[in-house]
Length: 141
Image 1: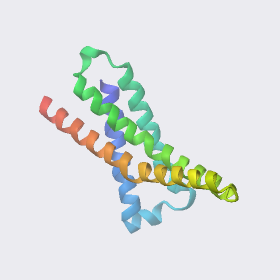
Image 2: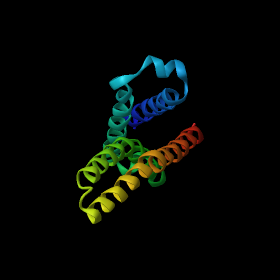
Image 3: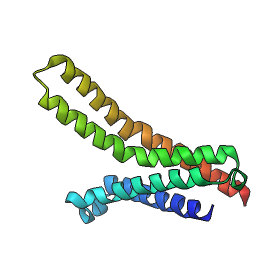
Image 4: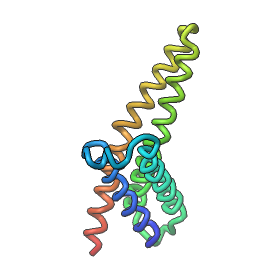
């Protein structure tokens, strides 16, 4: 459980940094160009690590609800970068297949869906999961 807490808190710190990177001009200037993606990659890797460690967690180590919220938190973190990648891939394929109308529309729909998942659903799932995990950690103390 100690490794899970470390990974969890590291993901919270990286998430806050990503939000700051998007909305705080001095931090935007600090990390620009290709370096912009590094926090997203770290956030995704922390999400995957959280999922793997939660999966290996013994049933007696934590209650089922806490484990479910850790899964939601990890999936939200891992999903952001995955769905951004899928959005870009589907968009590129839609452009390549623009002469095939039905396929182009299908790929555009998948691109839009991936974008929606990456920008709204995954961060929201991460925030909800992380908030409930933090509340449960505070209650335990």
